[in-house]
Image (cartoon, one colour):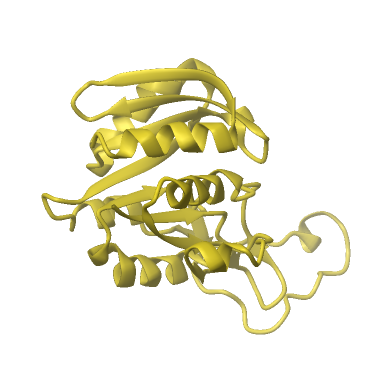
Amino acid sequence: MRILVTAGPTREPIDTVRFISNRSSGKMGVAIAQAAVAAGHEVTLLLGPVPVLSSLHDLMRVYRFGSSAELKQLLEAHFPDCDVLVMAAAVADYRMQQPAEGKIRRKQGTGRDAELTLKLQPTPDLVRAVASTKRPDQKVVAFALEEPGELEARAVAKMKRKGVDAVVANPLGTIDGGHVTAVWLLADGGRAEPGRMTKPDFAAWLVDRLSGL
């Protein structure tokens, strides 16, 4: 199969120095890409602003992105040529309406005189946009990071709202960690829960499930 994987956070610029981002390490997406290569698949990895081993470039095609806008462009370029998209990247939910030119200077003083208000707007829903363009022979897998008590309900709602074929539901403790306790949910109602695993072990487990889509 031709598998397209996204990994890592986005950085949405506030000015030329600062940005809005999140704690995603990209470990899960990179592990999935490596497991897919090990299983004999043709892999393209879209990787955010995280450290990466140079050896990745010897195993697969790697393209880097910073912002959600850059990731959108890469998805538009590479999604048409894949069989399965695994959307493991953590796209920021908001970005500046208009990033400042240059560096925003700290205001002098205290209290309200020193406050700074940032005007934000939602980032595009990249998963939903891609899923809306998929052919019958293409599949899209999303990730959902939620509170443990609402994990599956929110993940199922996300799967339906975005029109994807499957979702990996993760509790919040997964982010930037070495292990994952995920639930694999399918649009047809299928469900699997492999238990607590290291991210590389879960990645191999997940890649096995992709062929079943």
